[in-house]
Length: 317
Image (cartoon, rainbow, N blue to C red; front, side):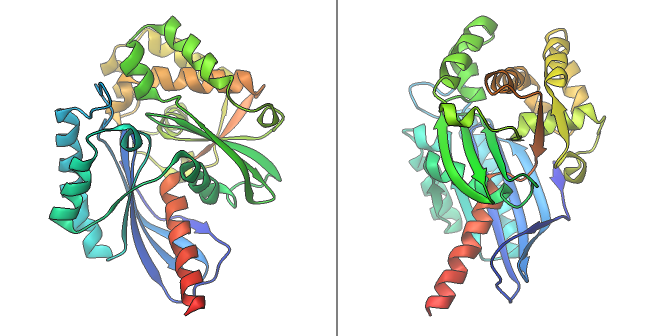
């Protein structure tokens, strides 16, 4: 999936044009952002998304050999593109990378072949990056972001454009799939158990913003989009009825039929049902009738953090 050309506004005011490339290495997808920072705005030049399924068939906290091969193929495809764009390349790993006992294989590959560091962020930083990415995108005084990933879900409370609180729970699509397979009832019970960990103060937030591939994919499917468009998906709305309808519809379809509904990312078909069930239960838990879709995920927050840090360092000098 490739999208391009929209602007993300920011607080700080670096005057010189700067460039960055960010890899967000999740449990299921690798998202890649190429952006320029120009006069206080982060301008997207190109975006890419590939399904690495890094956490697929992960057992005993060990990444499977097939998953490594998928990862290396994606890295070999996109690192040269990023290096041609900028020397500022940030590669960030999240839940799967935190869990994996054999993650050194990725760390060493990136360092030895490309002289690049692999930064594994903790769950607090992951939630914070989601907040940085979306704090100025929605006109709500107070809202709650949830980011459903392959290994975990992050909840970030935004108030007056600032990150106030956050929590991460081990509620991930691949994690559930690896543990329970297609046992729908067991998955529902586990989702409910994990959502009970979300603090009560998060329950009274009226506006919800959903981040992650399940939310954006279903928004695109609802709109009948055949070629993914960030502009159409970002800030769109989904109702609880929409989510319920697709849960029931996809139960009756094969993976091939579901893939046809989202040709922009057909590999997601095998896990989309679990993602939808997580969304539905989040909306139920938080008494939400609608959610707002965000296509600004962790990689935007990582870019914001990079330029904020750069500005601080330049001021210190």
